[in-house]
Every structure is written in structure tokens, then in C-alpha cells.
Length: 306
Image 1 (cartoon, helix red, strand yellow):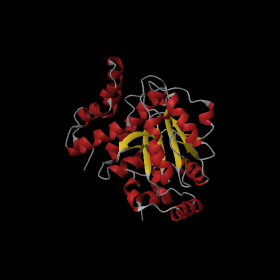
Image 2: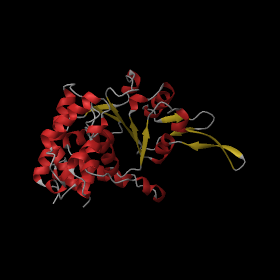
Image 3: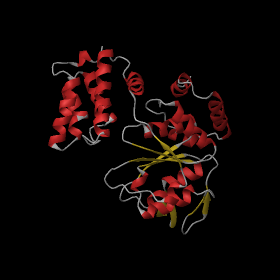
Image 4: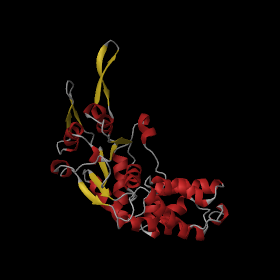
């Protein structure tokens, strides 16, 4: 059995929902040339209530927007949904230079004629993929105009100079957004209305232990307790605005643990993965103090891993 599905069943996910998802997969098989886009997530998403909300919405043809603080698993959930539904995924990260041509496509000269070099939104729409709009609140006006058409209930996109395209019945779009990042902006009402919005809860100790046990089955319980405690301490400090969210970096923590498993001492590894993510000297000292309460200076990798 697939690990992702096994995890959902182990969490007690709605069996009716899982059967409906299987029916969806059978109804919309993926062409052979697109199989390389059906990407298996690095780890399962833990949180059956949130998963069920998102999955039921997608089954009903809705697009969803995942909002919340940093390190709440938005991208992991999006990747899990695309995998469980068996759809090719298209990841679109928004930034200051993202415009309509980078989403839909741009003119190119091929075979002695001007043709459309299709972009990820176009490909996702016609191939029935799951499009993941990462940091959608960084989208500028030109890109937002494409999103309005793409997410509209009519499920049609007019490509200037070319024909109108109809979205594949299986095509869905998942937006993600963090609060307060530099360059972000408030989403306009018309764009938000095209989504069902899910507020992602903060990571709990139980969820974090599940994640780390999946990634590091050889991790010792004492090491697990201290690493989870460290992340939750940082999460609390960030939530109270005592530090920024920069050190609250689950990817950085996982990277640090990988270097510890390879043999590096825990303290310098965690400095690289967590402490040094802050470039403010005062904040870095605060984070270092938090780390020192959890990770003794004399610890070696053997205190964390068997």
C-alpha cells in the first residue's frame, strides 16, 4: 500500500472520501507522457480534518487557498493532494517578475512561424493537472488578471492572439500564502472569492514527531524530544512577536538533522539550519539562547541518532 494512503487510513480519514478519490483517479487516468509530473511527496501530511476539508472541496471542482503562518505544512498538503488524486502537478512560484506570459505562454518562432510556447497554467489547464500557486499574495496585477480567468466558474481562458482554451474536468488549483513576507500584498476580494479558504493550524508536538519519525526512523527519543521542543519554543516566540519567523524554518531544521546524522555535532548543524537564518545580531543571540536550553554544547551526533 502507498505510504501516503496508508498514513491517511492510519489517521482515521473518512473511508467514503478515500473511495471517492479512488473513483476520481479511475475516471481521469493520466497520459503516459505526463506520468513524470505525478510526483510523490517527501512525507505524508498529518492532519486528517484539514486534509478532508481540502479533498472534499477538490472533488466538488473547487479551488482552495491554504493560508497561515510559516511552517504549517501548506506545500506538503498541496503535494499530498496532487499525489493522492493521481494528478500531474505544476508548481508556480510568484515573484516580482511573474507576469501573464510566464503563466499562459509567450510567442516563439518555430518551424518558420510564430507559435505559442505554453506556460505552466496553460499546460495544467489542458492536461488536467493540479496547479500549485505558491506565495499567491506576491502576484502582481498582470498575473492576477490571468488568475481571475483561470479560477473563474466558466473554466475558460482566452489566450490573446490564439484560441480560447477550456479547462480539463480534472484541473484544479491550490494557492498558498504566508502572512507578512516582504513583497506580499492583500489579495483582492474578486480573487479570494474564487477559492475556498483553509486556515492551516500551527504544528503540534504530535505532528512534528510524526514528521521526524518518517524522515529519521533511527532518531533517539531524547533527541526527538529536544528537537521537537526547540521547534515549538521557536514557534511560540515567533507567535508572541519576540523573534521573527526567519529561524522558524522546518526545512532548515530537517537539513540540520541530516548533517547531524552524517556525523556533524548538533550545535553547529542547528546554527546553520536555524540560528543563522536570522541576520539581525540581537535576534540571532536570542535564538542561540533558545537553542542552548535544548541542545547541550557537548552533544555529538550519537545523542541524536543510533
